[in-house]
Image (cartoon, rainbow, N blue to C red; front, top):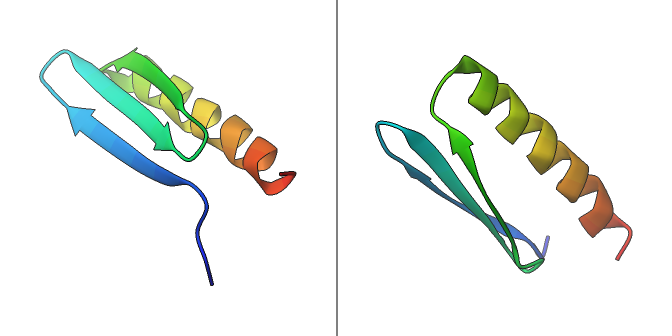
Length: 53
């Protein structure tokens, strides 16, 4: 299996910084429960888009 998209995650005390390599999408989320939920939905949304390519 060949992967087209890789995820890079940097977790700090206040933020979660995410970059999707292969798509070029980046976003920062707050490091709390709400931010983590937003992070998961954002990744799911982009993973569906990358499958269409």
